[in-house]
Length: 72
Image 1 (cartoon, one colour):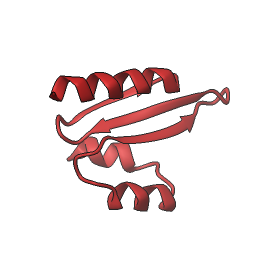
Image 2 (spheres, rainbow, N blue to C red; image 1 turned 180 degrees about the vertical axis):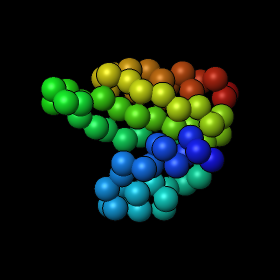
Image 3 (cartoon, rainbow, N blue to C red; image 1 turned 135 degrees about the vertical axis):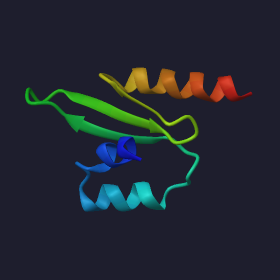
Image 4 (cartoon, helix red, strand yellow; image 1 turned 90 degrees about the vertical axis):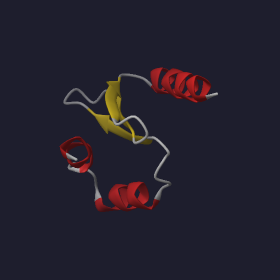
Protein backbone atom coordinates (compact mmCIF):
# COMPACT_ATOMS: atom_id res chain seq x y z
CA UNK A 1 0.00 0.00 0.00
CA UNK A 2 2.93 2.34 0.66
CA UNK A 3 4.04 1.90 -2.96
CA UNK A 4 0.70 3.14 -4.19
CA UNK A 5 0.62 6.02 -1.73
CA UNK A 6 4.10 7.16 -2.70
CA UNK A 7 3.25 6.94 -6.40
CA UNK A 8 0.19 9.15 -6.02
CA UNK A 9 1.52 11.51 -3.34
CA UNK A 10 2.72 14.16 -5.81
CA UNK A 11 -0.35 14.14 -8.02
CA UNK A 12 -2.37 17.21 -8.76
CA UNK A 13 -6.04 16.82 -7.75
CA UNK A 14 -7.11 16.42 -11.38
CA UNK A 15 -4.54 13.65 -11.98
CA UNK A 16 -5.46 11.89 -8.74
CA UNK A 17 -9.14 11.87 -9.65
CA UNK A 18 -8.40 10.53 -13.13
CA UNK A 19 -6.26 7.74 -11.69
CA UNK A 20 -8.79 6.81 -9.03
CA UNK A 21 -11.66 6.71 -11.51
CA UNK A 22 -9.68 4.63 -14.00
CA UNK A 23 -10.14 0.90 -14.26
CA UNK A 24 -8.45 -0.98 -11.44
CA UNK A 25 -6.52 -3.35 -13.73
CA UNK A 26 -5.11 -0.71 -16.06
CA UNK A 27 -1.60 0.63 -15.59
CA UNK A 28 -1.25 4.12 -14.19
CA UNK A 29 1.12 6.45 -16.04
CA UNK A 30 2.10 9.87 -14.78
CA UNK A 31 4.34 12.28 -16.65
CA UNK A 32 6.63 14.58 -14.71
CA UNK A 33 9.55 16.92 -15.34
CA UNK A 34 12.84 16.80 -13.48
CA UNK A 35 14.75 19.85 -12.23
CA UNK A 36 16.29 20.37 -15.69
CA UNK A 37 12.87 20.35 -17.35
CA UNK A 38 13.24 16.92 -18.94
CA UNK A 39 10.17 14.72 -19.01
CA UNK A 40 10.05 11.34 -17.31
CA UNK A 41 7.23 8.88 -16.67
CA UNK A 42 6.25 7.07 -13.47
CA UNK A 43 4.26 3.89 -14.05
CA UNK A 44 2.41 1.48 -11.79
CA UNK A 45 0.92 -1.90 -12.74
CA UNK A 46 -1.83 -2.77 -10.24
CA UNK A 47 -1.99 -6.38 -11.43
CA UNK A 48 1.62 -7.13 -10.51
CA UNK A 49 2.18 -4.21 -8.09
CA UNK A 50 5.26 -3.27 -10.11
CA UNK A 51 6.29 0.35 -10.32
CA UNK A 52 8.99 1.97 -12.37
CA UNK A 53 10.28 5.10 -14.01
CA UNK A 54 11.03 5.63 -17.69
CA UNK A 55 12.87 8.49 -19.33
CA UNK A 56 10.89 8.51 -22.58
CA UNK A 57 7.43 7.91 -23.94
CA UNK A 58 8.92 5.28 -26.23
CA UNK A 59 10.15 3.26 -23.26
CA UNK A 60 6.65 3.41 -21.75
CA UNK A 61 5.15 2.17 -25.02
CA UNK A 62 7.59 -0.75 -25.12
CA UNK A 63 6.75 -1.64 -21.51
CA UNK A 64 3.02 -1.50 -22.30
CA UNK A 65 3.47 -3.76 -25.34
CA UNK A 66 5.55 -6.27 -23.36
CA UNK A 67 3.01 -6.20 -20.54
CA UNK A 68 0.17 -6.83 -22.99
CA UNK A 69 1.92 -9.68 -24.83
CA UNK A 70 3.03 -11.40 -21.62
CA UNK A 71 -0.62 -11.82 -20.61
CA UNK A 72 -1.68 -13.53 -23.86
